[in-house]
Amino acid sequence: MEFRRYFRLAAVALAFTGFAGSANSQVKDRPLGVIELFTSQGCNSCPPADELFAEFAAQDDMVALAYHVTYWDYLGWQDKLASNDNTERQYAYMRAFGSRSVYTPQAVINGRTHVSGAKREDVTGALDNLAKTGQAMNIDIKITENPDTFTIDVGAAEGPSSAAHVVVVHYQAPQEVDLQKGENKGRKVTYWNAVTDLHTAGMWHGKPQRYELPRSEVEKKGGCAVLLQAVGKDGLPGPILGAAVVRRPVN
Image (cartoon, rainbow, N blue to C red; front, side):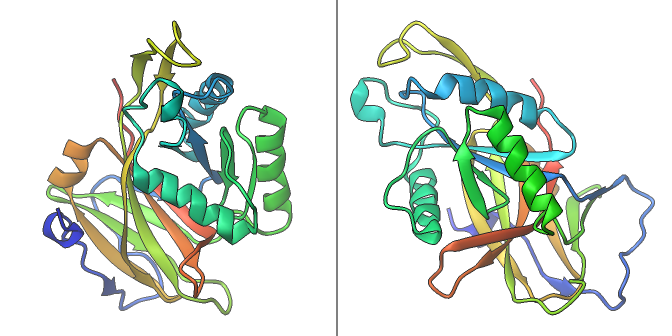
């Protein structure tokens, strides 16, 4: 289904430098960072990363997204949460980082660097290093809940900036999977925030801007996050400048 058919996401330039006020519930979200975990149910190195990822996903100050990839399915277990789009996103990061191969479990941090998703000290160290060097979330994104919509207000850049994509990422509520074949046969693993689809919803050009999502579409799809991500002229994903969670699903 075309994105435009189910997302009434109209970009409206704000007529003022601040954010619009509202009597409804508002969340101003500048998280500590964005963790994108590339994982697979068919990879025997992934369960420790999936367990660690669950801790990050449960934090209110973190945006954590799990992209299940397809290339380990040949080992005997088809990952039902995997998609070719998820795999392609990982390969796009590979090209952006100048790497020669992909691997799991890989954690991409803020769209800027990657580490083993199974090593807590690597993930937290990367987050700390990016924060110290000014490469954390630098753009405010505020989510306002309205009766029929979620309003997303993206703030202004503090200095000169390039255009960035407003990316909407849908993901599922936590679910336990009984792995009956493959390298993880006999395990029961709970998977958090498994990404189901990802779309570029609009452009941001450094100035305050507003977007709207139909509430009904967001709620029926589970969780939803918004990433403000730079994209190179070659179309490859770049640094994530801001992020927020529209809705966190629970069991």
